[in-house]
Image 1: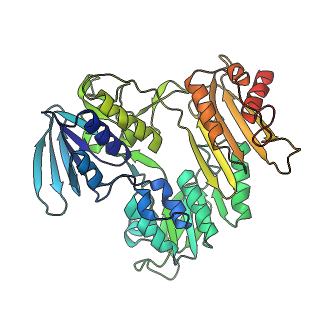
Image 2: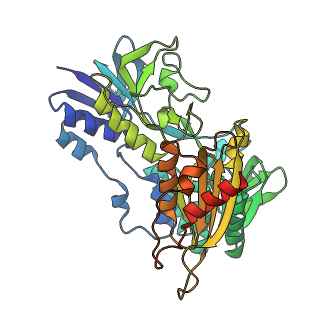
Image 3: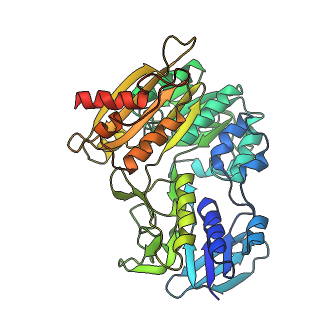
Length: 462
């Protein structure tokens, strides 16, 4: 009988457990999770704040009971205190009873996920303690933010990535006067280039959101006239100003939650566990471990646009990697195809989607690329209505290989990023995409679809 220990159970852990039990229903699978719930879709938090969620319970796609029914032995509210990777033992503490127990395993799955980045900022610990600054990651955070949104009149959101931008949008939509702060000079600077982020910033301004961009937060302090002990307000101090509100939400990004394995498994600089094409981890000396796997936010991904290991904590990556653990847990069977980090977001009436590298991402990595941007209506002008699409293609000027794409419109352009994602994974050049078979029908598109049109323009420029 084979015994598997799965440490952590959000997206990757849930799908790994399900996949392992589907392939090996007679195995003993122990699942250790320190929270009392699993599989929470944190991407729904902002939508819930804005009352766009039918039932918050539906933001969970599985449950401890469902995994138990599938055959897993569930250890909810258990904190894993230590793991001996090569000795194949772990120690876990029951957070309800305080009891500590040792377990033996044959195979280990590390799906410990990620934790919010909490920078060493003066006053932050005290503000987190009294609730004037809140985090946005798990179900507990979601409950707290939703409750606070009912009474807050003002809010400061720190971090203008996807989570921060969505929270700022939803706060403004429900009448909370909002300030969005980021050390970077643009909203969504790591997701989109200026041709798109400029339009997003205008939308925020049009909806009354104050943008405090290019401003690093240096301190938190109680709002004037309060000692902060009653959670009555907070002042966010940046290098260039001060912003006082009823509450602040910190969305400074995520880091791999892998401290348990820091001295045992090979990692990249931020602590993400390096995995091979079959989700296998390695010792710090590079020895591949056939019985130790990692997936999801605790692990690296193979980023196809660069061909290198990277850290990209997305639920889609976690799900696919978790499923592969079950496929490969006996022997290397099914390779990981990598990722383009394809994503999308809706802010006000603007739909945005992206895949692969932005031009900014190229520059941050010290690479070389060109960028082509096209603006055209998504369908013919003889239709009673149409609306523009901004399409950007990032490509290698030497190989002409496509490295990334971004789209924005009031029309639903979400699937355009999927089209280019497949093209990147297949190794398409701008010439290949320019000649690809994309349909025309006046209800849906121009005679030359905007995906093909931006590729044709790139060919002309190249």
